[in-house]
Image 1: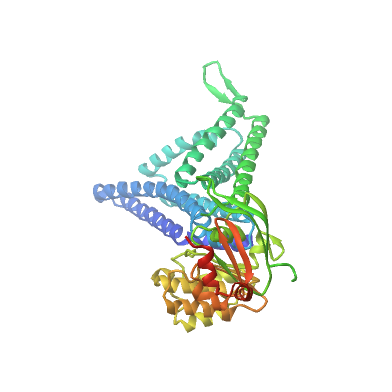
Image 2 (image 1 turned 90 degrees about the vertical axis):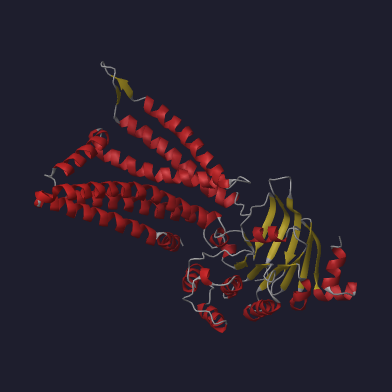
Length: 261
Length: 235
């Protein structure tokens, strides 16, 4: 049944996601072509330069929109399919609560990661063959600067693994907050938002306390995190704790506290 | 197959607000192969009981078995539920809904559904959002009655529809259930359904007032179910 649920969860927002990806890639291609023209034809530089700047801005706006809208679509699917009128059909399917939850997490992560890949593809299109050009160089320079702390620190593979699991757990926390919000009699959406901030605060405190054990201050007064094995073990424990609380709590609410009124 | 289609023991459902009680210590056993009217005024607990049967609400205490199963995926596989509201995604075509039911319910008979739809002149390519309210309700009924379920639970299926549609709905229910299956039909329009009922369950303020066959009511009280209802629930 999980496979069938997944099929419908993936299909639910497919058209909207594909449309967004198409727009982003089209903007990236357009920008790339304009930048290419500038490189080839320096006489028309000023007019095309304005267009390139506009397209480049549109591209980065599209990247932001896809990130934000992606989350909104995934959360909306979770809420609408389970807790709105559609829930009357969803919860009368011969399916367990854990299958519902798993399907929503897998399909949600699929679209969020697909969005990341498409954004990366867009950046590659922008950069392809134009690495010598000043504009692209500058953009890449800014990007490198932004992501340097992430790529440059600690064990890169571990960091990637943690980033992936943290994304999954972040989505699970949102779902858990939605489930907790459903237990309120009124203003369930607002209640979900309040729960989300409450959970974020609580688990940030826990994660902060766990990380504090591995913080050192060097002689220049700079704060450094020691990326030793203990740090990864502690992070894994915190992640597992979060996963158990968020997944277990959501499934328990759907199983034992469901109140579709 | 000898297990009752529905068994409730000491079933209680309280709503968290204002101390409202949906059901109070309900004990109820219903046999198979019958059309049962769940009768009571608004707010009496009919929908609460129906939602508990379908696992859409969780009780505070008590036990509930459907066809011998505790409420869960197994019981949901044998219950076909028609809620009061429209629970379908309005953007979908009827064909997509048939695919959905076919994927999740082993007992869904697509041919039967297509035949019923064809008789109404509705195309499987039509989207729900383009249909009138009455047509949407009929499509929903067709989906529910195209399953070969052990129990059909229909919440106010004839409420708010015109007499012609009422006849269509009752005809669809009667002609599509198999004799072994049971139908629980909640309504307060007793006069319209009395002729099709085998048994009635009357409910008031979350408590069961009466469980009886229609024949027994006539024999014992010398009146119709409608008349008895008016007497029991007189304001």
